[in-house]
Image (cartoon, rainbow, N blue to C red; front, side):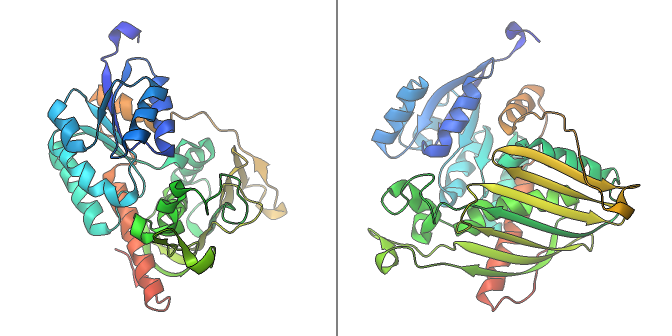
Length: 357
């Protein structure tokens, strides 16, 4: 396909915080995609973002942007609690939406968003960024094709250390981190921020959703009086979950921002009746190893070659051009939100076992 064959896709960025730059840079690298507007209630942040990415139009609300209307698709990069109120009017206006994760802050909201997207008939996608990792996609393909037989057991972790070492910045001095640390700032804690990733990481590869779980959440003392300015640092910092999947497999899932020595590492070990897989994203490297027949008797693990994958951003734009749907969609976001809700309910009730579906 030549550049003259590409129908220009005009993209609006809603929310201009740190992750918005990754969205803007991804779109800027694509042929036939134009960044046409930015939306943010903070005028300084908005104009700095637009200047950095060469964006002309600036709006302080989605409503104002919709009155203008000269865009086809949206990346919603607002804080978690803002996804629901900003996405619904975009869907009603027939705009395609790529929304950051988690899709919402409750299953009720996420399900309403999924239903609205279905009724609007637009491309809808949740930016679960680890779907961009070749090891994840290849492992999911192998499991679906029966390479490890019937899935029986798994262990999954997402480990970060930025609350024990300022690798990403001084979280106790910079307001930009509050959306991850305070429920009053819309945070679901480590559970919503990265727990959603590792739940998707595990269940997507396993080919089954969460059926029931028990969960323990923990918030640690991190700052004087547990506050930064007006905000209490009450969002959870570590989460541990025992999970049963709809296919009967059981496993453990945990996530923490207190994992000293791990800047941003994910790992899944998944075991079936005829083999096992070790799936990792560590040190920004995609790694996949397998122990399959005839190596089971010797416990020999070998590296697996992985084809490259198209990023979520590319697949989102391609789906718009093709008039097709794409995954992970808002339905997937709602399924994951149901599991997150169950985790919160379990923790609040003494880590009891909670049915998800």
